[in-house]
Length: 180
Image (cartoon, rainbow, N blue to C red; front, side, top):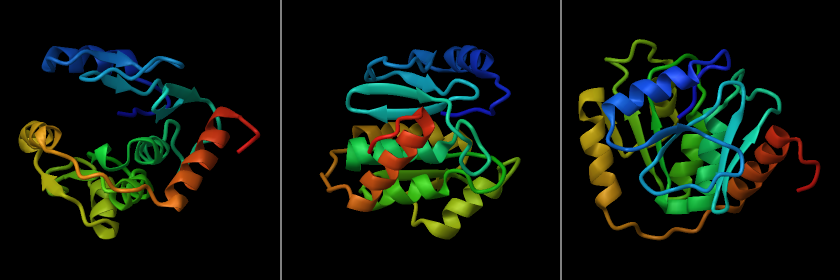
């Protein structure tokens, strides 16, 4: 999950923890990814995931956002192929669309909030206009859909080379690494 650069990270972690049985934490650089945990991007830092764990980057904004959900989604698609799940909720502009395309093309699952109930429908509408999503549901149904998705057997699909390349470039820019 990502939040605005100005940050409500700790507040969001606290609120989510009250509503979820899963542990919710602010992502920490170098931390391993643990099954059944919810990681929140730190304000002003890109969140990148890999099989090795979590990386945080302070590189430039992407699509005007830092953290950018596109960077997170592309890294998830490249690392976890058809096991990746992207969820886009209410929000301005089109952050999330490019990342959801990567998840979709890698065989992952794309879930979008019904734009008719979104306070700011730009992000869900952008995804719906560019990606054949698996689910477009209300927030009230989101938990049940996610639970269903996580219990399904996943068919392995290879990650397209362009997704791996875009994820590597985004990671390099976000973390300031100058080699590919």
